[in-house]
Amino acid sequence: MRATIIIVLLGLGYFLFWPVPIAPVAWDAPHSLGYEGVFAPNNKLAAMTTIPMLADTNTYGPEDFAKTVDNKIAVSSHTGDILIKLSSQDAFTAWVNTGGRPLGIEYDHAGNLIVADAIRGLLRITPEGELSVLVDEVDGKSVNYADDLDIASDGMIYFTDATTAFSSSEYGGTLSASLLEILEHRGNGRLIQYNPATHKAAVLMDGLVFANGVALSSDNRYVLVNETGSYRVLRYWLKGEREGTHDVFIDNLPGFPDNISRTRSGNFFVGLASPRSAVVDRLSSYPWLRSMVQRLPASMRPAAQAYSHIIRLSEGGEVLESLQDPAGQYPFTTGAIMTDDGMYVSSLTAKGVGFLPHKPH
Image (tube, rainbow, N blue to C red; front, side, top):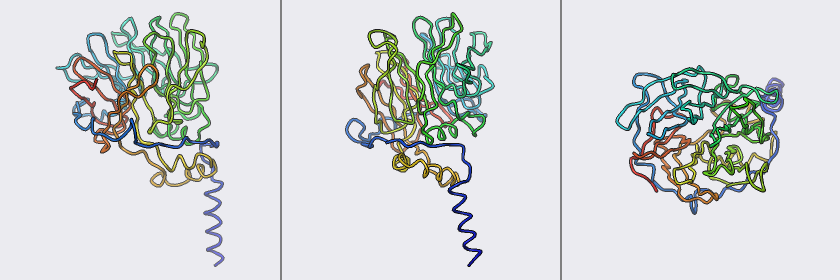
């Protein structure tokens, strides 16, 4: 009997006091409306085919795309490789390995590929393949988890540092680090502006719960940033009467928003990587329970659900289209771009690039 009591007390002590990497705070998750109304389930992505990345390699995780005016496509990968597809008839081929984990990518006006690398920071790769680090520290804090970026017509670069608290190199990869940031919910993410002419970087917004995708409006009046852990997209005003302020562009999404990109018509594609977790939402007001969950074996913690989902938003934040595959045959969708050939879809974990040869709008 005494041994049993000791075992129970030890187990209780473990779940209450064993150190964990997060220090959760209470917050009120918005009531999820689920997949109803404009988000009602459909199978519009079920017809996607998959374009291989690199044959006979372990390359996977086509996180983001960048394309040129002549439809050359670059894609980032989990292995650090940037792959290039020169035309619709060509296969993807390896170009440059960043030596880190490239996530968001965009071409600048000089043809350089600008890369948000979760391990190395904001990078530039010249057309000749020469790589340099542009930003790895801002305001005395390391750029811990550069995630996504967009480039304004004046050359200014806007990018996110998803979390200053949980680096992917220290906490088991980008996905593991993102889950810690979201579960803690203190808001360690920030939106950063980098001026390539002066080589100066400044924080525009901080306190974001996993600052993720970035996209500028067609007139560069505002920049959007996905706050993944709060299921919403925020808008930071760059010009006009509201310059320097921010507001909510769309909130209470049914999933975790990942990348965002502007379409050719000025709308926005947003990838929802996974549906929201009812358990995580219920635990939002109970930080001590979230700490206990973190002490469970990984297999017993809430897990992301494979689900394919891309939404298209207007310049005013209205949902224009919701494209889904509830079966998640192409899992953990992060975003999409349109070309003359159709829609390319990216993913956190897939071994190939999703492709729809028709235009959904």
